[in-house]
Image 1 (cartoon, one colour):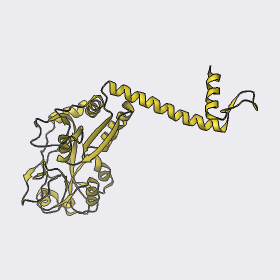
Image 2 (cartoon, helix red, strand yellow):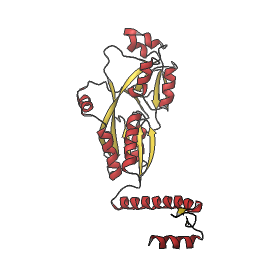
Image 3 (cartoon, one colour):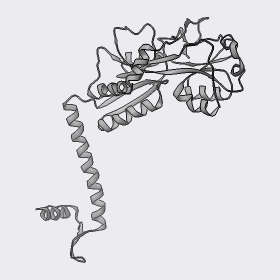
Image 4 (cartoon, helix red, strand yellow):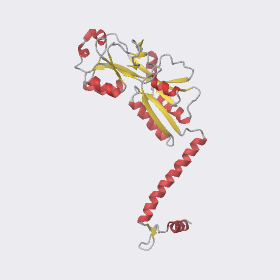
Length: 294
């Protein structure tokens, strides 16, 4: 049966796939090896097509649009997406990284199906948004060792207002009139967290950063932590969000649960018990100043 099928295939192709004369056991010819490689590619493609069709039949999304807050630790994002790729190999993913209200804006506009958003005062009970708590990250105030604030001592809190604070800005209309955790009236505004880190290392101002992102710098001494006397831990909470009228399918729901599972029981207890300092909110003055988050 197999020999008959191979003979028919060779007749259709017009050349032999096996050398049956020079060896006792038939061996693939050079042309046969080339055709075999192509055949495997076609077979894998058909298998993928069948898997995608099975997923569509059971409601699996063919594509998932995800937007995450720039403050989300990279390790958490990589862990979730690596597991997602293994669990849903047929689902394409589109990822965007935004700041502050831009995450919620993209979900509200239907551009993204799921968002991992930071704090959004006034939107916790928005009727169009369903929030699910997925942990937090500690924000720490840092500066370069050569920065004057590194030697400010007990007068640190007052001195912070006298020096340039590097503030992360976003492109959202939702939060254009609100500053988050901005202490100093002197600010530089940046749209990229990586650029902010580079300026902090260079001693150009001070600023708040996610602890995982600066942990190595603090260990090596290229940045120092600024801890005003009596200051409480400043945590930045995350929520998985989606539109109430457009809940995620199987892949999206699985991804949200993956982010939730990253939060250990100990961390959940800390979220409930740890004293925290909320972000300082203030309306911008004067009008026309860009919205931002620290």
